[in-house]
Picture 1 (spheres, one colour):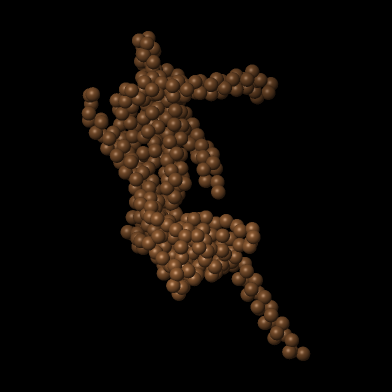
Picture 2 (picture 1 turned 90 degrees about the vertical axis):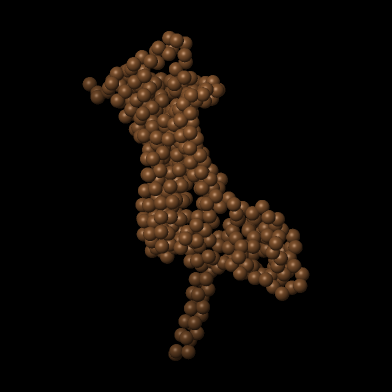
Amino acid sequence: MSWYKPADVGLAVRRQLADMGLGARLLLRLLLTSGPTFRRFSLVRDQIHFLGNYSLVIIAVSGLFVGLVFGLQGYYTLQRYGSSEALGLLVTLSLVRELGPVVTALLFAGRAGTSLTAEIGLMKAGEQISVMEMMAVDPIQRVLAPRFWAGVIAMPLLAAVFSSMGVIGGWLVGVVMIGVDSGSFWSQIQGGVDVWQDVGNGIIKSVVFGVAVTFIALLQGYEAQATPEGVAAATTRTVVLASLTVLGLDFILTALMFVI
Amino acid sequence: MQRSKNDVWVGLFVLLGGAAILFLALQSANLLSLNFQKTYAVEAKFDNVGGLKPKAAVRSAGVLVGRVERISFDDKSFQARVTMAMESRYAFPKDSSLKILTSGLLGEQYLGLEPGADEKNLVAGDTITATQSAVVLESLISQFLYSKAADGSATDKPKP
């Protein structure tokens, strides 16, 4: 006997394909029901409060510390070449172009994505979703769509907060602690950062990550087995899949945006 | 509308995010200094522009007086044609000269404008002819090597 059976491989491939098709169908329905969702904006607002406001502290503190560490490490390397004034540019460009959107998306997947998956998975386990369907309330429109749009709206704002806090962290280490000249620190940033090329593309990135992370979290919750083990597995899958997707998408987006 | 408490917090969150974007756009990328002042276009021809890029600064006495608008190749004279947008509030004599300079050891390249003594001023469409090309490290080294070799042969000859 070989270690696999052809039938098993076929089943696995088929299951993957079915998952993909299901995901595409759910995404399409989420987008199609966005009209009614925005007419009842209070639902989206409550979800922004839940996803955005509660993630704000961890995002802001992480951003600050990433900026602080970046300031120290960047200064260590740059002062060897006598160009420690470029510290601000180094910190700002890396944050705005890469670290801000990516780390925010990873943190968001851990902080908010898991709670989305668990919430919807438990709603399913408690048969609340089935009850809604019985009452002719579309659970995708009533439950999933507000969460989806809230995630998409919250992510760029959180990424911007992360990057800003990081720049402030770099400034604290560079200018306040080490004593890099404040004027050249800022003028290097202003000379080297482009509004559309760097800041704008960073925001586009974070919107894409917002769509990806929120959608993966919702899909995993919606497709979770309605048991405690099923919800636990779905939550784990959310973090793993969302993180890998963010990193993969980041490579593709960077290759598309910043090719010179 | 119920639950106005949430409204306030969400509003604060959105405001904070907007402020962060604004901070990045204004303080980092310096959107404010995009000047909407009137400019006039002046051309200059260089034998070699080195690493000069569009948007590079044109400075006179260290003060920003304009920016490089575009750099193209002139296939008649085989030179680089640099178009600059000079700020209208500054006027320079017609025989001003341009140099390609580097800020710091590893810094970016910019144009240094040295005013001449002509009575007439530069107007839109003028071409600056007195230019000094960028220093290219390779040609500098080869010059140095040639002069060394010339010295060596000069000192070797009288020996025998």
